[in-house]
Image (tube, rainbow, N blue to C red):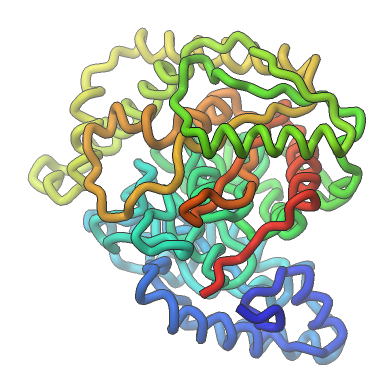
Length: 463
């Protein structure tokens, strides 16, 4: 790894060099594509590359040459998860049952990125319809972790996590319905933000519309906030979208945590599994926050069993998805997806209303909790990244034992939460922690994450 490799530079660094005419968007794109050509065959992070990327980079270079960039990301390479529409490129969603033709229009997030001049280099892999955490799908096969290709990068934003860790540009779009940004970010050693629900507009809405969000995955916290600026824009296509909040999400990010109250959460509504490496990461992060001036203590918000609530939200959504396809074609779906759908067939409307009431109760419990605490610190994943080639077995149970026991609660409550790298385990794989804040306080999770980043600078995979 070279500190001067443009593919490994942050978006902020690239923009500074563009402004000084010390580097051009075309040169950066060439560095990224050369790195993709060399490393991606072993990692498999891309569903499709964008044939228009070079032309877009050339147009950006021309704008920088005359000192007229069109926006805050002009010429910065970006990838987009293959659940998100990019006009002219297919949206296959990791499935053999989707149409191979190009999307007719950009999704709202892509519209925001393009308006700021970002260069879309390609679409990254996802698990089929974003249904699980291991990074494989029927259409594109297995995506692998750049730190050790024998291990999974996680999912469902598997390609985005792998691309970020591998240095395939600085900015990457993921989606998160139960942890699908934060889990791959944790296992790949990058920063993954699940914004407040509605902060980033989405269209078309996916299977998990009532809990899903879209968020940035980056190698650093400041780039994460910079990308959020382009994503967090009102779009009338999304009926859940928040009004515009005219701000730079980097404002206040260096203010630190002195005087903030931080709760260490040991139980997200049930006895969630966690290995000693993840516990050690939380304890290390807590010490960093104390040293930065925060008041840190263990506390329990009294959550209901989030496992029981989310399992139904997840399972019924997948059952509805499966039922949208003709019976004669369902055999082409991921077998685990079919297993979950079968286990959740027959849910009544009354039953779903009961689980919705429990979801609201969980959100209320956390809202009351945040009257006392600014931030919550907890594990992000129950274990280090599993092996990539391991088959998915008993996915209903795996959701709570291997995948999302620590992340799904904040999808139910719709709060912002962020995965932050926290060094490495003895086997060389990344460790991580998770920070959450009250609904709409995305600024606080970014501040907390930046504090941890300054205490222990993040690393990039040396490939």
